[in-house]
Image (tube, rainbow, N blue to C red):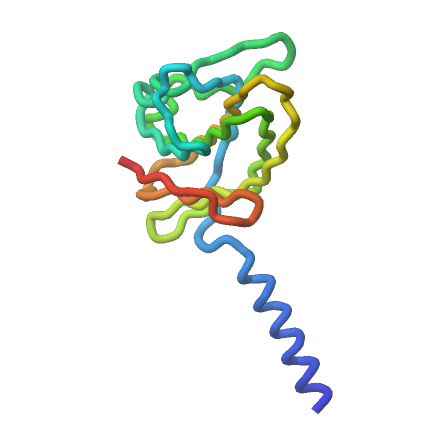
Length: 157
């Protein structure tokens, strides 16, 4: 009886651990920095969730900003030949820092998991983007999971 209870307890722990794991195949990704949301980008939602399939679409929303220090990892020219860029932008009186935990693809849905922390920004208003490129093969929809909770989606057009 004790053995059965221990086995059931171990099984429940294993099942709980796997429920939290992302479903699907792991996807290689690159996180890009050095970009800002343009004033005339036209994004209304806060936060905004995007799946961009061309350099033209990307350039309508984001610009490049170089600062002193380490060279940023900007989206390179030619990236859209094999890649898709997914992004989220949070706006407010805070600066959002992102840490991507991983990306998976299952049944046409790309899931991007990330953690966020907000830092006080005073009275200024900030737009903090997370920009990630992934292989575009098979991606029809993007699901954004922030701090363990579904935050939003974007359709690939």
